[in-house]
Amino acid sequence: MACAGAAGAVILLTSSALMSEAQAGAFGLRDQSAYGEGLAFAGMAAGGSLSSMFWNPATLSAVMGFQTETSATFVAPRASIDVLSPFTSNEGDVVANAALVSGYDAYRINDRVVLGLAITEPFGMRSKYDFGSELRNQGIAGTSSITTFNINPMLSVDLTDWLSVGAGFQAQYLDIRYTGVGASLGQLSVPGVPLPLSLGANASLDGDSWAYGYNVGVLLKPREGTEIGIGYRSGLKYSIDSKLTGSVTGSLLGQSLLTVPLDLDATAKLETPAKLSVGVRQAITDRWRVMGGVEWDQWSRFKQVSVQAKDKVAVSGVGEITVPEQDIVFGYDDGWFFSGGTEYDVSPKWTLRAGVAYELSPVGNSARQFRLPDVDRVSGSAGFTYKACERCLIDASYAYVAGVGDDHVQSSSGAVRGEVNADAHIVSLGFRYRFGGTPTGSHAN
Image 1 (cartoon, one colour):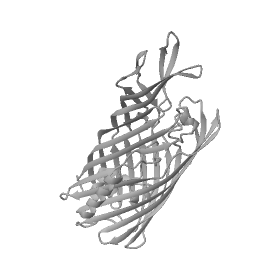
Image 2 (cartoon, rainbow, N blue to C red):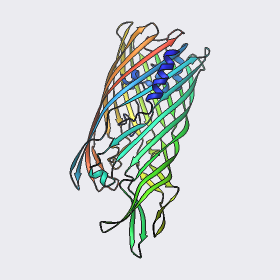
Image 3 (cartoon, helix red, strand yellow):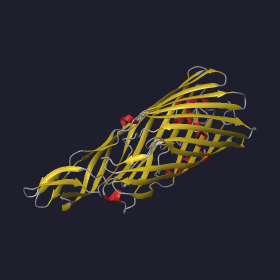
Image 4 (tube, rainbow, N blue to C red):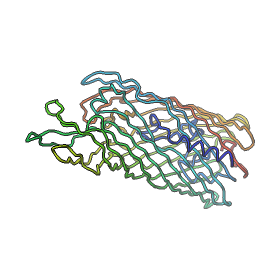
């Protein structure tokens, strides 16, 4: 219990870390398990470790006694941007290294019911352009960051020897920062001359909020050695209390005639995607298992972020300017992730594993902007589990992710175009401990 408490403290202390670049489509984060990282997350909805509950709460049915698991992942991404037209520039790498920590606890109440708790970061990203960048000066791309923290209690019930169901409640915190909002506000007559107004390139949006949802799942064991899991995580709707700061500018024929400081309360509305995961685990022998998985993320619901200022901007000698609702358009499609993996028990103490995956990014060619230049990706990973003691397991994994396919990127208007070259190195470490109970399946489970 002391180990579990210490792990929880680490999670709480590190949960505010900003992820530099999402390691799933758009700004989704799939790196919730050191065990799963070594398999390219193949078959995680069908079980394998306690962290499988993130994909499917019904996998809690494998828990005996009290179990805990903590995973820490270090991500070293690269997203190098080159602007090609109407001007040329090398923006360099716009992302930075970052860390992600996830924790899981579960307790079997009786022979049919298991309680679980997951603390994770399902979404996150951070990109930043230098202050001397022409993209920042024109309000095309500045600093963009999203941080989340998800608390997810769950329950699993064994209905029969071959069928388990699970459900959970999600409470998720989200913090957003978006600089260089840059939007047209209409015209102002000064005096008698139509003066186009816009949010300045220094305008920024900051805010945070909580949202609530659920997750459900089912786990089937049609025969000995075969497990099939299906899990669903609901999307969440946010209404974020925010601050809209910076300035409002009025320009005519390229000359700035008016600049007014901006500091308003605002509301930002957005929706995070739902996730459907399907996983299969098949034992080939007592020591060898293969896995496969498919994930669907409903990014099509993330069309835009709508920002509505609650106050007006006072302009000396003119009056008050109403800031109309601003829509920051993203227009994403649904994302797909396909993976396959295998693991082998080399000895009672060592298990080796590996996996490959391909992801269809929800960020299509027309939606790929400089703030989040996401592309399709392929990945390969490898890892191992070491049984350090009778009740404790240590997981370690490495993955390489490479962007593939179309790499062009553009501003929201399409006037500025460029290309992105992206990849990432990922290292993940995990610790699992079991208090009481009798383990089932291989020692890696």
